[in-house]
Image 1 (cartoon, one colour):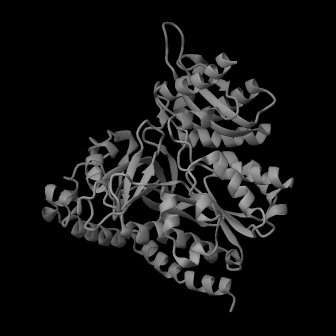
Image 2: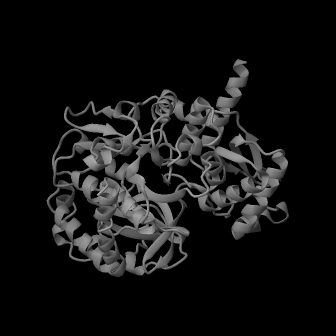
Length: 508
């Protein structure tokens, strides 16, 4: 029997376990909760926070909510080699993550349990769910092109490893995944991204690639490089058996139209996942919907803070899974087998189904604009951009936006920096269309825009190609898991990025 058929048969057995947590989601969550508390009692963190007294969710809520700055002191101990600090085992892997791009990188511990029962399990489940939806899939007849992150040695401890999560996963892949992955590790783990993209393209153009895996923006950069090198018009001419694009990290909507044109396959399949250095949380499990199934047996206990009462680590209203409602914007809180306890990851979600639990990512707790009561979130801007780009035949590489605050008798506004791959014929038309879409999507924004009383029309500054990359590079953040923050209530990022373009002009 061909290997592809054997693999498809084996991996579909996992579907029965997925069906189990879909049928009994709350039971599975409480079972996970009990296991985590038992493990936590064996740690320094658990002893300091009296985990031995925890027997219910109400008891657990006495443990303080945490953001990265709160847990960093504990993580630093683990990095230096101290044992049983956050999890009762030796931790050798640490994932370097930015989340939203800030001056300080986050370093997240990755335990063996988190690797095997969360991150690697998520990768297997992506394939299991895909084969359940597409029984005739032939993914294992060809290569899997994974655009991974970079890796480096942890200088604080001789026997630990620091790098992007994708690099850690790549380093620990099981044999059945490694034999099909391309390019080789030497290229895949390169730190310098300009050279890395070129080498990946040249290394894979003669491979039989069946799967592309990566962040949409970097995957499109790679696709354009492949076409540039080969002189072909579409990826179908380069990789005729390309079947699937697995993506995550940022919304695919602003990229999907142009990506389809680059690919040239009307029949190619797309699967979205929601995974981060802190854990693997959701997978698109339906063919005709991009809602994500909440994965409940990965060693993660979930809590949810309604955004209308969100106060960061001081939030008073926190729900477990049994208490959530449809259509409410929640900040996600996780407790994991990676040693994170009541950790506010910074993402917001809305449930679209409670049986089973499916959701959409709506934005970031700290990536929105609410300077005038408009409560504009990333979910609004991504949908609006996708619609306007489709109508005006435009394509955006990256963007960021911030408020222009009211001054004397002047109204406020939203100012946008946009780097186009394909610019619209008229920026004014693009601006007006985008403004109208945002008004139709967000009633609070529309109310503030009424007769320009609070907010005037949004303002757009077009950036030259590569400006966002230069900004990321200046922060030491250029790479696959680092993203330009979409929305901010502060003007810092906007002014920093704009200064790079202005500075370049001054040099000329």
